[in-house]
Image 1 (cartoon, one colour):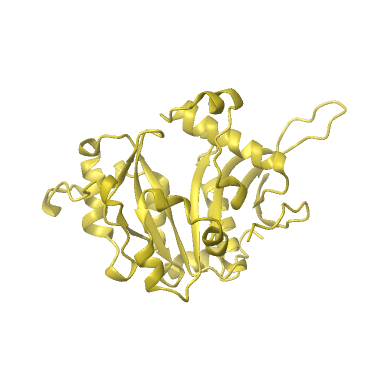
Image 2: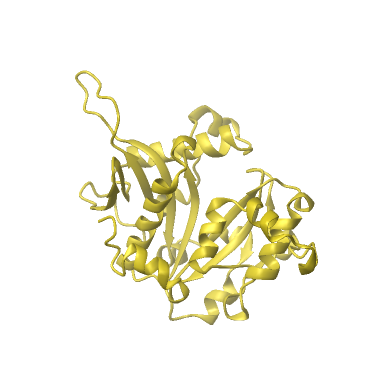
Length: 278
């Protein structure tokens, strides 16, 4: 099974001012999303580019052809003489459905986490992997992030997804320097056994680096990236163990978010049928 071909008639999920959220419609848009990922991961953050990636200035891998690419576009762009103005891609999310992943060798995050026990415990549920989330620096505000969530929620409803999961990253590769954030996640948000995932043994980094009584909550929350805090507010859990990704200069944790456990506050906010920004 392959993902459906890109479709120029793919509808808009939502709009907020000059910003729009929808799936990529053309390979050109996918390539532009890869350029956004390169700008964020390789130029702004600490990812290490191989010569090909550096030459093309695109972050890409073999999973891109299997995924849908959620985009936030800004239509407030200057027109160019004799050319139709193209909206600027300012944020992106990569979405991999379970039926596509299983037909093509598995999910992206299986290289870091042992997903099999969780999937085997829930054979009747439909899983969606989220990844490669990024937003250009000038657009990292509530509006853009809200549209990304709105798009992901619309996609979840469209494909009858039961569980969202994926890797989320803390900047840095020294777990001891991240001990407050990792320990906070371990003590306060570790997934119950039903949803427990564990980092692969060869890559497993213990998250329990401080006793719970030594964790300053304000310091821990300040140390968490906005994406992870957003997941936690929705009701997400974290896996047992982190993984250091030296290529991207990050320490990764696994987020698991059963749709049935999403806070009613957020479902009401975005709309049970994803109508808030439709």
